[in-house]
Structures are given as C-alpha cells and as structure tokens.
Image (cartoon, rainbow, N blue to C red; front, side, top):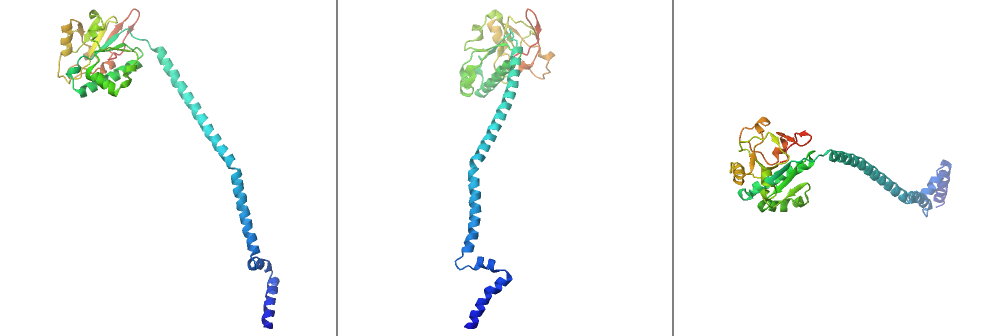
Length: 273
C-alpha cells in the first residue's frame, strides 16, 4: 500500500518534470472545468459571429434594395430612351402621311355565295388590307360596304376590336347607296377596259369574294346589271400571271399599276385593297 501511494504521488511530479502538467489539467480535471472553458470560447466566438450577422442583416437588406432600385431605374431609363426613339419615329412617319383623295370600296354583298371557311379567309384579307392602309404614307379613303351575315358574325366573334377601327367607313348598306352611281367604277378582271389612270373623283369598288373561281365573271355581270363603269387593273404590265387575273382583296395593295392625278401632283400610290 505504501509503495502504491508513493507511485501515485510521483506520477504528477513526473508530469511536471516533462512540462505536461498544464495540458494534463485540461483533460484530467475531476470536474471538467478546463473542458468547459474551452467549449465556452467556441460558443462565444459563434455567438459573436451570429450577433454580427444579425447586426448586419438590415445593412445587407438595404444594399439589396438599393441594387434592385438601381436596376429598376436603369431599366426604366433604357425603356424611355427606346420608347422616345420609337415615338419620335412614329411622329415623323405620321407627319409624313398625306391622305389620298382616292376612295376604295370593299363590296361584301357576296356573303351568301361563300362557305364559312371562305368568309373567314375574306375576313383575314380585310384585316390585312385595313392594317396596310393604316401604315401607308398615302392611305386611301377605305369603305367596307354590305357588312352583315356570316362576315359580321365572324368579325364579332374573332375580331371584336373592329368596331374601334379608325380611318375606315363601315356600312351595312350596299355601295350604290353609299356613293353616287356616276362616281362608281367596279374593278373586275373580266372587264375589257384597262385602267391606265385613276381618277380621284371616282370611287373604285373591289369585290369581296373568295370563291375559288366557282362564280366566274360575277362582279363584271353585277357592274353591267347596275349600269356602273367597270375596268381592270393593267396587271399584265406589272405582274406575270399564269391563270386568270384574280387577286385577293389585300393583294392589289402590293401593285402600283396606275397613275393618280390630282390638282398639283402625279402619284403612284399602292392600292389599299
């Protein structure tokens, strides 16, 4: 027993001689005080870090808000610049627009002769015709006559905005009840008369008919029946066609076949039909 006591007392002294008593106290303490002290330091550092994070939370939030606001301002400024350029361009174009004295009437009185799908095609042609005339530098005075039946139903269902169309006159009446008979000229490919020059005192009628040649010559016969003037565009001088010279309503807009005289100038505007 005495030897064991001496041995146990010598062990701490040996540790002191080796200089390890400090580390030994940290790990061998009977109540774990050194270990608790070490854990407390880590906790304090963690708490300090967390506290700093919390303190800077509002600062980070404000920075994000400032960056977002800056991006919004830059985007808005860029849009204003682009919008200003587009608006200026549009204003310049509108200033350059010179309305034509030419009157163009779309005859929609053939509704009962067409299938529903063909009436739908006519509707699309009228839409394109209207849009092209709105963009033209020399827009004609556009009329839509005899609107009713299937065509009006399709327009009401698929194009409700047509009631707000501008720079177009829309009538349910027949064109002969809208314009004086002596002013009318029906444009039909079956007419023997070649239209070399367009008269601004006349109103030119285009047949609104998509029939795939099922009713050949019907517009020519209508013109003769009503006793109004008729003529055909000189397409052979401007367009090579392998079949009958029949164009869609909006296609005539792409042609410039005739000179249009007024009191002061000589124009060659596109026909908006």
